[in-house]
Length: 452
Image (cartoon, rainbow, N blue to C red):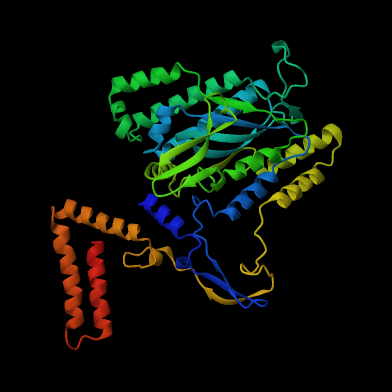
């Protein structure tokens, strides 16, 4: 029902079913209608406010003069497939395995207190299941030894150029990630917290499971570190990238080339190298297949797609930022607090803003509110008898009812039950002397019986 509900909400987004406001133009006297949005986090048209909030919060973590890295951790295909039936469990595995690997590697190699901001993505350019996280990680922090400001540096014996940006050894990082993730996966299965159905049903067999574990342990997992692309790059560049993909689903409108009832053609990146190649090719899917792939990335409401760890976690962020500012100031006397405020103001200036309201007919900005229709609750909009909900959604609800009653009471029961409800209410309405209150009580009783 989660998938159906999301599709119904996005179908109704910015339509009259959700209410809205009417504005009248003082110049041409015509009406401009602005309908309410659905507000669902999967909707490509919505969540601008959420993106702004995320960007604002993330930008406040950025310090001037500090290099920030984007680190990407990707799960193997077989675990991404498992995630379709175990979304919360695999998301937890991915987030915490990535953080533990980062923390362990940075503390071992660089010896400073780490912080990280992570965003979950579950797709690739072809909209297949491809679970990975993008992490924003500072290349410096307070020393674990004495609290002094410590920047990440390549080991002298490795022969790296002193000017080269370096966080940690990428091979050590990905192998640590693999080890921690596999151990977490083993615990999930041992504790009976994995549903293994569909294409991974064969993994219920212990022998098949052990073979799969051996295979993924023998391969190098995909995790890579992206340093600042240029000397002038800052953490805001990574923040803007993460913000762009925070909400709105796995594909944006500008990637869609053509779409009709039969097919959808869109741009997709081709290549299997780390990070993908910058070659865009058109990909055509049937409309049904396109919708199916899009729906793979609808997440349950309780799954949090952005998380902060270490020094940036909610309980530590204020104290961590203060330590960073104090350590930075001690190093070069920089006015770090002013730099932070400047970074925040710059980020806020670049945020998407709502366009000025103007008449859609003549372009005049002289418009005034004349009517306002409040948005009703979703329980009313998507109710079983609501004429506002999409026809396919009402039909799906009816089919769900039929399946429920036929499974519970035997095949064919739903037809009798539907007749019983209909004839019972009609008989009550036709009864002489039945007032409106009695009629309402009869309908309420029938509805309660349906809930039973």
